[in-house]
Image (tube, rainbow, N blue to C red):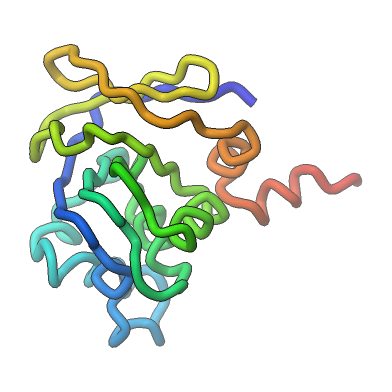
Length: 167
């Protein structure tokens, strides 16, 4: 699968240790992703759900997605149209849920250099992405195995399996 690059993504910044309850608040879990999306990150960034647009990126501190294993915490960001989440590290469960649902996570040790509202791009060279900042600085990211990128391009694990199912 060819890895895709993109540019012109607006960065939304949040801090470290953003948990799954901030992404998908428990009070709204009885609803679908549309309603959960209205409340995504409201405890951390009240302006996020109303202002985020398809193609934007979320830039976070370390330990993004800690907490429960609720997959809606990754699904809501994909539902809102985020192109990627960029952070130095992720909870293991969140990492797997995100790729299973087709959400691109970029592990970038220097994510804290990206400024709020900055326009960034992502360039893939082989399996290794780089974040390209608005002034041209490149930030290295950890390589992403092809099987995970296959899930992102297919829209998640289940759509990928359906594509591969023999007719």
